[in-house]
Image 1 (cartoon, rainbow, N blue to C red):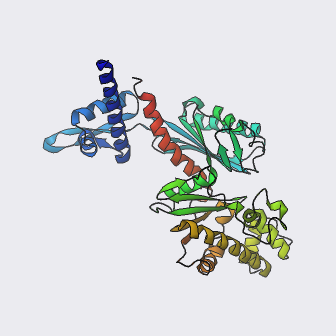
Image 2 (tube, rainbow, N blue to C red):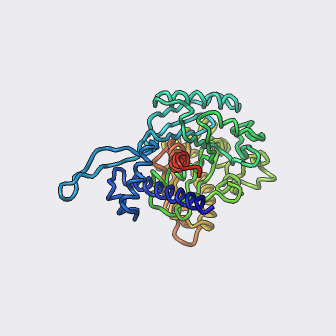
Image 3 (cartoon, one colour):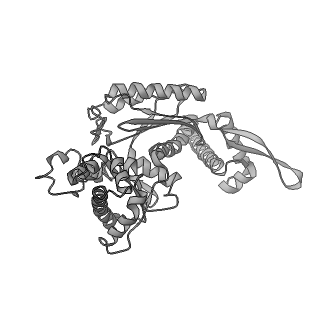
Length: 399
């Protein structure tokens, strides 16, 4: 019994040491054994054993030497990029965007294309083909992918395998529908809300870097919000935090005057792309077909279009006033197909309007610099962090 306990303890220590060495190697990029000993606090012999095991497992590789003290040369190590792969997917109503990255985060293949259909089986077939194409470009197979991350509208109900609050993806609200994603790439997958992923993308690569408290507000086909609190994504009890489309903000009483708004939510019915067009038409701009038509007309000085934009500013400012009162963010990042177009028309008027609605100084408001890539980059950020854990788990001893 004592021998078993000792072996178990030794295995645990080995795993902990290897994880520490792997994490520091990834953080530093290219590193020597003495540097790893200094950074981890482990002895040089312990670091040497961990390096040998990680190299044998295919997670690290040698990349030359560096001259040291007294003419000695230190062997240099780095994470082996091909040790793991992340397949990231942004599922939109009109487009799907996919990317494949190696374990150090280099995107080796990327493709965007129109969605081939709204039926679940058509979308799965399209994503399977895209996974095959991108894997082929990287010289691997779909089975070699360590983790797939799918960004979708709505909320993934893990208990039932359904996708709730995603009216733009009909059929995905059925029990077990999300399980169809399991066969697309590898055997491990994660489903996240697309706007949550956009917030992670901003926190990792965009305007949210170094900002501990901010929100990403997406305005496009629908509306939504990703919340970063104390540097971490906040999902809420059921994963529904940020479903701002259901805020009671709009025109009139949502129950009496806007029964059609109920499935989408009152705020979304006026603030989304279709909502903006609807407001413009009600104000007397019958030629408006898309939100871009309204914005272009406003930029050209068309008074009705400018009034429609002013109404949008009013709706969004009231939503942000409530968000500010509850969350007190330092920064609001506007994104989505509509939000990313509104910089010149929106940010200054929105800030001014918000100053009249909140007691304290309002948060800084900026338009996302990541554009349509925000969701995909967020999927890669979450996927890479998880994939690095997975590749270590798969090389850990079983006893």
